[in-house]
Length: 190
Image (cartoon, rainbow, N blue to C red; front, side, top):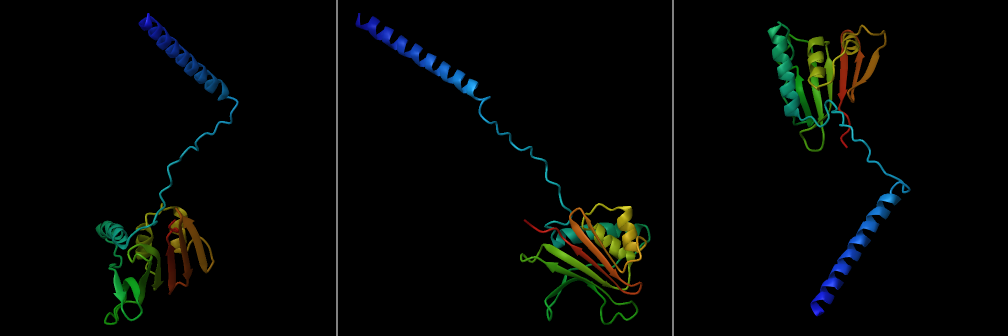
């Protein structure tokens, strides 16, 4: 008899437990519509910003790929190499050497972030070399457009200075037909 009583108590306890769990599920299910529902924000894939966190090695690789393509078409652009001028602590990709008096003065300086590898901005200064300027901008990875092409060639407006933001990269061109400055600023790093 003890066994029957123990079995009956165990079964009734299990049934009551199942009933209690079943009613909890129902109340939880029933109360959900009355509670505010919080949807997760749909996560869109982040746009990959051109030139964001690009190292000098990545940039030079892109630039030389473009330079090789242009060389195949018979178009010459300046050779870029990262150099540090010790006296001014200025990083440059290119500058006219003192011994090279046959060409007009041109230089391309590079501002690096604190890590010493990531490009923050670049500046082309000197005699207009549109092929080099175009290759320099394209190597940042921006989406090239007719508007950007016209801006670089100076056909878009009569202004002395032009600014445009493409894929998060700010490009400024100003100067005269004999001396131009092209500034390329990377998007801020977050």
